[in-house]
Image (cartoon, rainbow, N blue to C red; front, side, top):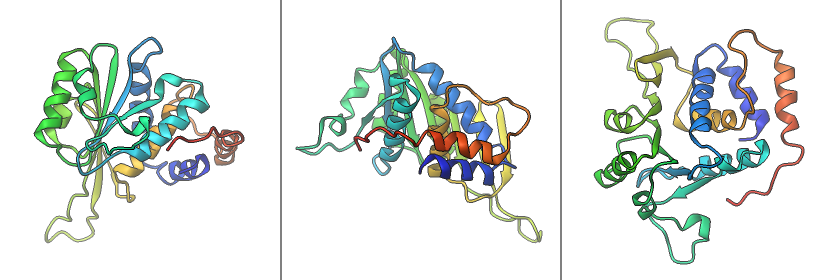
Length: 228
């Protein structure tokens, strides 16, 4: 998803708290991955590999001049002949420790083996962040989390009550919005785009949509080559 489409997505979701929640989480991610640290590890579940998020973070790291945001994608299955940046297996998590950040993307609860590796990495001093589907065990392992819960079914016998989508921004804070087709993939686009921003937007006031489009379109003038 290019910058102009992200701007359009933000405009569609402007009446919800999703853009702000994504920027808050992106700020936490950016703050945890320091230039002198051990880098960013990105891992999904056995059924869901966040390679698309990895590709976007590679681009954002280059565009923003923050190479420390360039992720190492940790994969559940590595095949012979995979290029080096796609050949990092789960064993890498066993070496994770202080100064490193581990971002787990989990639409559903991962298997116990991954959870145990993440738990060990946290005990060793790694900062753990999660983009998840609201699983309590995943959230319990994370220092910071952004959760995308499934829509709540309509209440029986009560007409005109639409489903809602819920984003949990951090511990103790829950924001509920009318459903806008927001899912974990959509939130990943918002987070990756916000991660590359050099500064967070002012909490109040809105710039004209055309101004935002212009600013984001400028980022496309010299895109770096993608490795993915």
